Image (cartoon, rainbow, N blue to C red; front, side):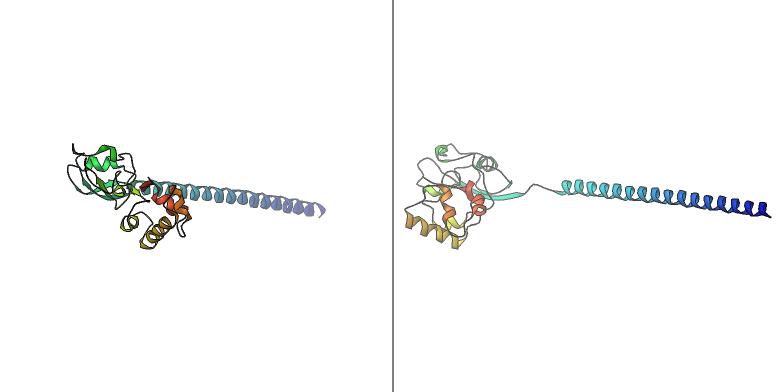
Amino acid sequence: MLEKREGRFKAAILLLAAAILAVGVWGFKLKNDRESMVREKLLEASENESGSASEDKGDESPELIYVDICGAVAEEGFYELPFDSRVFDAVEMAGGLLETADTKRINLAQKIYDQQKIIIPAIGDGLAEEETSGGLVNINTASKSLLEDLPGIGPVYAERILEYRQKNGGFKSKEELMEIKGIGEKTYAGMEECICIY
């Protein structure tokens, strides 16, 4: 009788140990399956992101700007140019300079901006100073309409520039524009390449 009880007890212990072992193995396998599933999902997400990023890069086209060039060039007119182009690029698109072009009054290295009117003066031309230098606007002599054409400047700011200029006898530096109400660093940075003083 005692032996039977001991046998049952041993069998119960063995069954319990086997059950614990089975649960442990099952839990370990479940954990591994979960981890590999998470890894797969992360890998998938990463591949999707890199795929869409490369697609986006492929879709990106350089920003274009449009300028109007006239004066002493072979072919006056409107031209489409890549963003960050220079006066030199616009002149090339217009067929190059004429022999009569006054190169001393042109800044060919000047960056150009969208909707800019570039006037290339001829030798002996009586163009106003603000309309020369490859489209650079002299803020000490420019008319209201020329100031309005500057990036970030409309009729209101153009009027304020004229008032400031009259009140202070002109600008001593380009940066002085930031003393005008409403013209901050961002607005100034947008037009810095388009202006000059002399």
